[in-house]
Length: 297
Image (tube, rainbow, N blue to C red; front, side, top):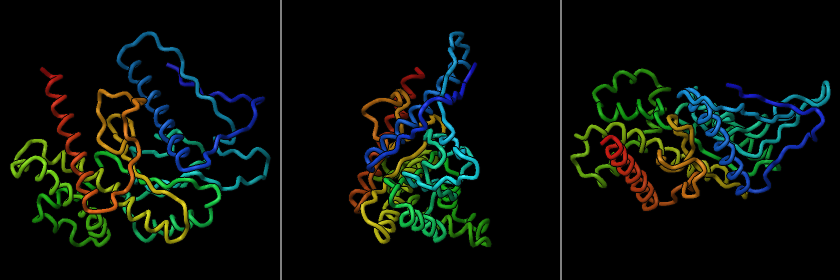
């Protein structure tokens, strides 16, 4: 198996950079599709496929962050700002297949918007506005911070485990809104007996991961609007099992390049939109569970 990074010293040193939010989101989507294809390539070989030509990835020094002249500092000029989780399984530039200087990345557990994060966002939105085209909140499935919050919600008597750690309490308090919203939505969509279902904790965590990304994007849009104009904030969630980003739980049978995917979502602007988003997330989870049962028969 060969994955080759190839550099042509005679090729023009050009980088494609988006000129609008729409172009930026498209480039991020295409980057994740390339990453998915590389993952699929590796998995296919791991499954015993004998025919596997090498995967060649063209690069140039600028993409790697290497100055083209000795002693020349590269000017910082990212075209997207990404607020993501600190989880080690989600290397943001990798899963988006982006180069050095493409993304201004802020990472914190649970991709919550604390004061320090706001400071970094404000800095990028004001000092890099000329190059910046888009702002993204990137959540991910199986988030440890969201999982911890769900467990506190389900077993409030165990809250004493974190009661003496102010930083951890603060993190869980910020995430509890999404967890409570997910629990309410599950009960409305599936009935009060859903709490006894074997899927309940798993669905509560997953729904909260998507809702948290959406809620944070709303807060982030307000913050960005307070320091600059014209920057749009979107959200998406990286599925750690399938290596794909999407605004709703993915359909495993759907290819990463399917035109029906909703890769980036807009922040819900009202309680009604929040409820509608919750409903769509849960409907997708139910559909996927039914599909899994059907495939196992």
